[in-house]
Amino acid sequence: MDATTSSGASSSLPLRLIVDDTLSLVSPLQQSFQRSQRHCFGDSSPGEFPLAANPSIVLHVLTSCNVEPEDLAHLEATCKFFRKPANFPPDFQLPMSELAALDMCHKRAIFKHMTTQEREMFKQRCGGSWKLVLRFIMAGEACCRREKSQAIAGPGHSIAVTTSGAVYTFGSNNSGQLGHDGLEEEWRPRPIRSLQGIRIIQAAAGAGRTMLVSDAGRVYAFGKDSFGEVEYGVQGSRVVTTPQMVESLKDIYIVQAAIGNFFTAVLSREGCVYTFSWGSDMKLGHQTEPNDVQPHLLTGPLENIPVVQIAAGYCYLLALACQPSGMSVYSVGCGLGGKLGHGSRTDEKYPRLIEQFQTLNIQPVVVAAGAWHAAVVSKDGRVCTWGWGRYGCLGHGNEECESVPKVVEALGSVKAVHVATGDYTTFVVSDKGDVYSFGCGESSSLGHNTIIEFF
Image (cartoon, rainbow, N blue to C red; front, side):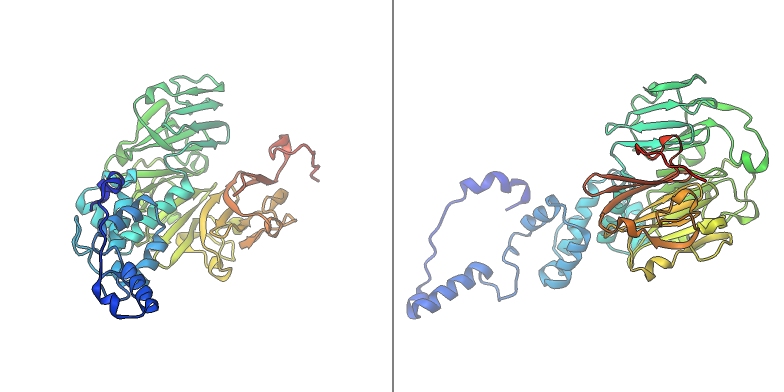
């Protein structure tokens, strides 16, 4: 019986009475026990999976129920039926749990466009298992909300991405960062009509700059046509007022973009991080010119570790990595205020693992980089913050700096699912849909009715 026909075939299956003469030779209690044994195991020896004769049913159930990768691993570890080759295409040697993971990967947009060779390389980069590939993809979906509606607040303008992939922008437009083919400000959300027919899955807003990522892995940028102008004193030679595809990234399938003040970073579907500019003196693991338009692979430890999310602060970058051993966070760039999370205020030229999460027994699942402080949500719903503590933006009841991640104790009764950080503000979303905020409350930016005086 095949999974594709199981839903309509059940009503037409004939019922047959199976009589076993050997049961008449034993006591009624033994008969009941033997019938129970045969019902559970058929003619196979105890311990065999009862549906082994129709494994397509099992595959259908595992795939349609969206079983977690961890659950597939547990099935494989506890039952030999899920460990042995399933004898199913596309790879007859794969066990059932691996086939189910591969099927669920096929449902993801970023996986569909891969060639066979690209998929195999992707698999090896993730640890050599389709279950690990699925975990990587699902982790990216959870922290970046890919393929879902989004709202992004920039320094002067905002972006809204609908579930259908349409993009609306509003706010300041002095550099053409709204993408409406002009420099007029917009105080109501207005769709970017030049993107008609292109489905956007992710957006990033920076000072006078906007970047959009499509479901085909293409990146569109508009606004200031230069990088690093604040640090180098170089003014942009021109502005771009409508979305233009970034040609230097056309051969790299991108799933996320992040904009800092001195640099821009993008993340490929395979988990590689590339950056533009701010590479002078090896500040981001490579050396570049102020207005370098070529992407440079972030060198160091992350070259061989898949990254699921990136977050750009004013002058530093955070990367959420997905390894077989678990989730981890790396940081690189300027260390002032302790915002790199390593217990010091020194700069890091190459990505460095933040070890404090292991000490706290925390599995990070979402990372956010504010201008001067950072935050993480763990798998169990705890929130950690670190960096500059001005205006209480770390949530620890004071304005002290923290050079390593510290759990926000005031949110101990809250299970967080998402976090966002601004210049000196932090917002946390709970699993119940409640929003908590702390930090600088000037101009009612925290959304509270009370007015807080700062001295």
